[in-house]
Length: 283
Picture 1: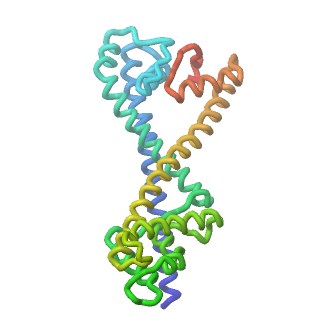
Picture 2 (picture 1 turned 90 degrees about the vertical axis):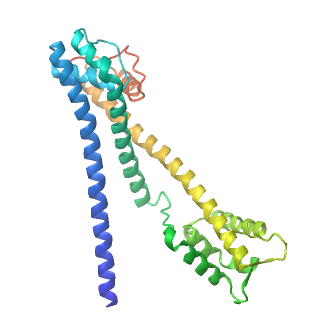
């Protein structure tokens, strides 16, 4: 029975990973499809009105929707100008939403890879519905002598259990990090011990743990924000490098500096317009 239970658990974990992979793949494909679809629709309208090749109209549509706006050329037909006048703002909003969705997927993939490599702590806090039970069980485990009060010594001896409840695996952290976690819990104990008696009743201890959970959640939120910034940076660097290599190989008259400069100016949506790709593959 125990073996069958472990097999069922493994199957459930595998099924969860497959489901997550499908969801991520769907979001990635749908985001890319939305970006390309909007630019293609605008490009088709401009191409028809201006009599341009589709690739030229698609390039203009992309620079308009992404707000890069190189300015090397623009529409001359009244029909395409009326179309852009009416639909540029809604198009920019939809395009920005699609790019934001694509960026979230890419950042999520990078975060998953970093967690898989062990570069980011993977925290699994208890569900909200079971939090009270988890806190109560943790307190009962801290009360070594069972007298209904918890001393600082009992708290310190249960640091690992409290950290596990908070989603902190101190066993895998450095001695300095373990000492910081112990001090973090000790400061919370001293703050909860308002009368200075040196021990906490269960109500005071429960309030202390609730405060620890709130502080930990704030720390996790800040960490997630830092991870998002790192993920965005990690995704932009290879994007710029790959883009520069592509333009350097396609544009025969460009130097490596020209290609990298153009890629950074484009990705940042600055679009100075002093350097633009020629007709063909680069565009």
